[in-house]
Image 1 (cartoon, rainbow, N blue to C red):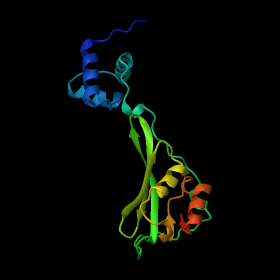
Image 2: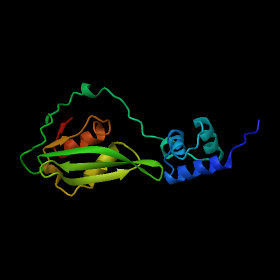
Image 3: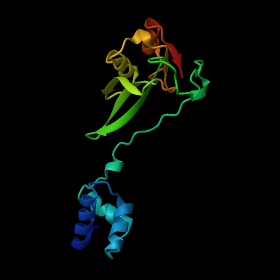
Image 4: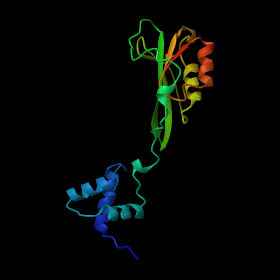
Length: 176
């Protein structure tokens, strides 16, 4: 079975896709076509996109959240959402975030002094793991012995042997 396409429709789909900077999928392209008084099914739009190998940025490998039993941790939440602390480096907090660079996910770990909200350490890399957090400590521009409490979320990259050793060496109390 040979598919015959209307070249006007093909050109419109390609133009809309490129104008969206490769972001639009069949749903949004169909809406844009309708604005131009061109009626086409999503199936037809998908066939055209497949023919010209047009792939939306949002169909390429998305980040997936991993669920865990986060409130069953034995470590206390010392801060209890009271983020106004009293002295410099009393509490350092950390979190990881991710960014898409050249189609691949990369992670950034920040260490933040709660006293003045200053970034005191950071690291970036392709893996979301304890080594990334460890690198943030090693790249920090402060005396780690001055930190009293290290507060993070309950991610596995924070609650493991490598980070335990760093906290033990510098006598830093953990808060999750």
